[in-house]
Image 1 (cartoon, rainbow over the protein chains, first blue to last red):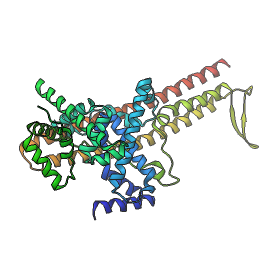
Image 2 (spheres, each protein chain N blue to C red):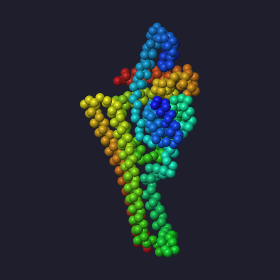
Image 3 (cartoon, helix red, strand yellow):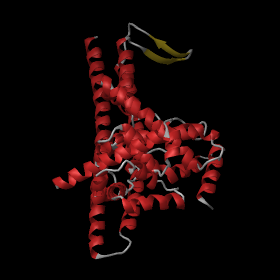
Amino acid sequence: MRPMRQDEALISEALGGSARAWETLVRRHETRVYNFSLRLMGNQTDAFDLMQEVFLGVFRNLHRFRGESLFTTWMFRIAHNKAVDMNRRRRLFSEHDLYAQQDAEDDTDPLDQLTADLPLQDPAAMLSEERSNRDINRYLIALSWDQRLIVELKVFQSHTFDEIAEMQDIPANTAKTRFYTALKKLKDLMEQEHDMS
Amino acid sequence: MTCHKTEFLITEYLEADLSGRQRSILEQHLRECAHCRQELEAAQQTQARLCTWQDEPVPHWNRVPESMLKPGKPRRVSGFFGWQWAPLAISFVLALAVLTNVRISNTPDGVVVAFSDDSGVSEAVLKEQLARFEGLQRQQQEERMQALTVRMEERLDAANVQLMESVVSQFGETTSRSLEQVIAYFEEQRQQDLQVLQSSYQQLADSDYQTVRSVQQLANYVQYQAGSR
């Protein structure tokens, strides 16, 4: 069965109330969404929150998915909107220093707290590729939010400038200029680091 | 030397769906303009560096929303209330009963609940109540312990499967070096598992200690009340 068909079959079963189908659908796409979130938010805690918000949004709107586009395209539209919302909220919270207060009020499972206190769950991720990811995250975090978002959409999600322009409600030329500026800044950051080492 | 076409050229060139004709026009310009060639090369290197990103595994989480779980299935009591406040709440109710001299007796006319009775609370009745409370508490702790063990096992199984997958994907070919790394990974994972278990047992022990302390305080108070009468 083709991936698209598999998604559609799972969506149909999930809409019929199958928890197993929903879980399978989530497992198929969660790594992409989590890594998308990780690159945009720059840390695991926020990335994890964003990923959960994305799938909650997908779950709530699943009945609206008409199959006119790929499920992944539809899902990443939701992911994009959730990321923009979360960034706005984070900015607002950091301005008013409510961030720590909100975290303290979270009602969480003690086991989740235990594992959150530990280092990364997967020891393999402690190897060199994770260091590479950390470097990339550092470069991305140095960009403005708009630049980071456009780099994510262009480089990692392989959208065209027209698609990005439509998603962000900006002219395609603005998207191109923003992307070009971001690339130049990234290049400078990478060169600076290379010179220092 | 700069070229006013550079930005246009690079952004167009990086579009995946360029037509053959568009691409050949851009390539013609690249052959003639050294500045654009350098800039394009730098942009491609930057993109390539970004593309070395290795997907990181997703931490454990509950994928199925509660609304999707079977109707009638009891909602899991959240950790905070279930673990920390239950013993305190029971102690509070019992303490209130002692303070207000509540007496529950089974008479031929039925169960009678009396407040502020002059006869006070009999020590024997209270001891019986405390023994019952202790039994109930022990049973609850055992149930919690079992549930925690099941969840710990599920969690550790998931972590081990994830670890195996990443190890297998990274070291398809078995060499002595990769074997050493596999052993190192498992040792790391074992240390993490031990830490999780240790913290979990500590939490349970703390919860037990809190309960025992609450009951002891209550018992002391009852002894004091009975002695003062």
